[in-house]
Length: 494
Image: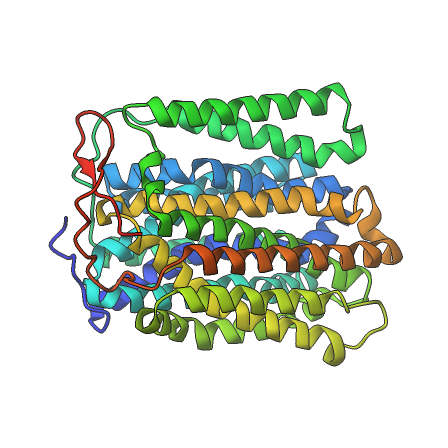
């Protein structure tokens, strides 16, 4: 590791490292949400159906979810700062391609390239924090990263609405370019390099290909089934290829000598529980955020800016409370925050079912987004710290990649499946009455998913060490081994 490791949170260099990682992950998070509020305008300008709009989002999420593990492995092996910077530059170039897209097909292709860049930079940002800061300061640094990164994500709808209304939708992609330049300048000057000294052998390209193919096949089948028919040859073939590829992926990861997803990492009950909780929680978030901004414009007549402003309470609550939630979890343990937070999110999503055409912002939208934001602020930082603390430090990139992959897969499946469950297909997103009926169903379903996340946290998460505390010595029980020539992976007490 670089001599710049073990930085203090209060040091000047520590603050620069935080700024670089927050901006880097922020542009990926911003892009994931800024597009939502622009979807109605993109749909009109490029003649897209609901399926086309789903692909605008999932074209980004698909390579991000499938390749983020490979991105974490590349960072552990070749340098976390180096791969992080490659991802930032790639992301900026893909953003330019999105802005210049003349058709929905070209836009989806450019969004796929954006997702590839995000797969390189996203795990690196958190792994840089984990490897650069002193153990006593990691929980605080992760809390700041989560809080400000969450703000970047939450401010996306407002910023997207402003750019669409004052200019045009390509500006939501052009915005990424100056931010990427700033990240490159700061990271080259201030961020220390770090690697996993045990990372050797060949890259798991077979795993990356099979994972991508599996997710692509299943996503295509779910999105296209309403229009083509669930029994159409193309949909059935896509589903079969997707399921077969995912089965092959698990086989390769289990038997491979250098898997990008070492299945041993799931021997930790704490790590596995946190990721199952992430799957349910981010499915709820991803599904609702996909529909909400479009619903406010289509059914309630909001302008793009008004739609974005309606979600500002989430931004403010994340800014004020996320770091405090991280500190709280480090003092009392993560179990209670990670249970209460999703329950509060579920309550907020349940309140969103009351949003109907003709209802006022103060009476229906505002209470829902305030409760939703409170729950989100209470959840994000403890969840992130728990995932990293449950894995061996030398697997920081892999642990970060696994949790990010789980979150993106959850969003990917929710964006593909929730409109089908709610009956929002074809051109229904342009019909206020049809959209309103489906939105109530979607809000109820996502509230149920958040409640499931709370139940998983309560039953699987233990109070104990977080990222800022040293882990206790493992019990003298069974050891789980990686590849034959690798050292044993010590079992966590969780």
